[in-house]
Amino acid sequence: MNAKLTKEYYFPIVKGSQFGMIKIGYAIKSAFVKFLEDPKGGWTKIMNFHPTRYLNSLIAYKTSIHFFGNEYKAAEKGNKYLKKQYRRMAIALSKGDRARYFAIGENLTKRSSYFQMVLFVNKIRFYPNNYTIGKVWKFHTEIRNILRNEKTNLKFRRIFLPEYNADGSLKKYRPLGVPSVVWRVVAASYEFLLVNLLKANWEENQYGGMPKVGVVDAWIQILRNIGNYRTIVGIDLAKFFDTVYLKAVDYALKDEGVPSKIIEIIHNINLNKPIIKPTEKKIEKERIKAVQKEAPIKLSNKPGIFHMVNERDISLPQGLNTSPLLSQLVLNKTRVFYGVQKYERVIHYVDDAVILSTHSPEMAIGFYKDALNTSYNGITISEKKTEIIRSMDFPEFKVTWKRPLKFLGCEYDGQTFRANTRNGGVFEVKDAPSKIEAIIKWLELNRNSISPYPRRDLSRLMNESWNHMETWKLLDPNKDLTDWERNRIIRTKVLKGTVEDKVIELYRGSYMPYILGSTNASSMLCAGTILLSYKRGKGRPKGSKKVTL
Image (cartoon, helix red, strand yellow):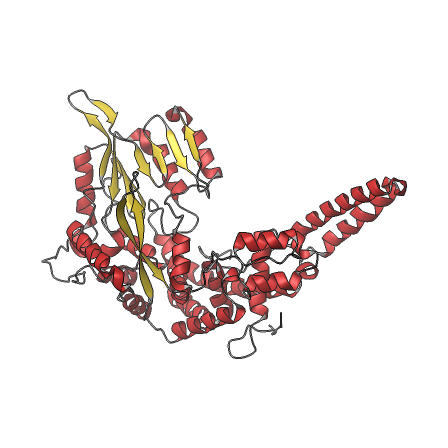
């Protein structure tokens, strides 16, 4: 049975064969240099020696064991174990045995050091140049303690990111939730269990929350269907995470067959309030008032109330891995995607949506509001941000564009298509209606380059919020460092004593720095170093050894 989970995590692995080609390149270069220095040596002697030697090395290094050594073996061993467990979970899901799926999944999240560490490596990307090996294992101990004891005392901070107008004046503070390093990994373990379970019944026109679909897929649907509808409306849900009733989340999870124990854990995690600086408590109170005003609580008079009455200060925590998934699950349980499909198409990405309709804009918005069923889940649209993009004018009976459709970093006004890229560039196509397929092809080829939201300062904020080390401070590089070592330290801001600093120190003076320009190779060596450094004791990965770097 070829069963596979939707979301899987592995340690970074780099095959030695990839770097064997680099070695061949260096061999040819050195051969050419030698020929220039000593022409009498002749091409025949040089070519017979170098390429043959390194082609043989390429075959020998194909498994990477001789090429990278113990770091590779540690990461590969972890991946073999994880692959076996993922397959067992996938088979259980394919057979509809959810009890077995959660039994294997809970055992993996609570007992497997490999799984807890692979989540850490994948979710805390800045760990190599910020934390020492000892600090990483301290985090691991805390993560294991929380998961095994099913603790729910979530720690997350409220951070306010200032946004400015074009003239430089302050526009507003954008509230962000930043969980601690430990809780980012804990939440990721619950997200892993839920994503793989929910994928089978996930709404096909909801392009957020699931792996391998996103901004590009949403825009491809829009471009391919926009010509079939006369009305386009841009919908924005008001304070999405802040408005979803926690009871509605519980009912949605129960409907999907999630065990009551996990539902209770997730519910209690979401009840926690953020840590707020004394100087920012006033801003937080203003934020709650704004939520109450824009999305007032609407009580239901019907029996079996689904919501939890609150003052909008308890909600799905922003920044937590599970919050986007849970909020979208509740939205999927409404009827917004199942209106009159023949006459309407709703394309969603988290809290942003585009309605393509043959009805008038007012009717399309009205259908959407009715389908939300706000009194049961708390979700409501933002009247201020909802816009009519295109509609038919009467009595002329002419379809006209009122404003460009701005959606997830791209813009389309019926004639010109623009897309913002992560490196600050702009992709623009004029006379777009006649070039739809070409635009779609470009989007598919540049799937990872589209920038839906400005995230320039977000990573720095998340790092600094829980990290007392100032990551922007650079060490004075020693004069005897090689060019690679100096560039690596400057580019990644490696701090003294951190995991990556240990890797650099370990391989200094060897041939490795010349091929470690690859981010994948560096990631693998750092992950392998962590696994190899795990002390003997309870929960130790089987067969690993403690090494002194």
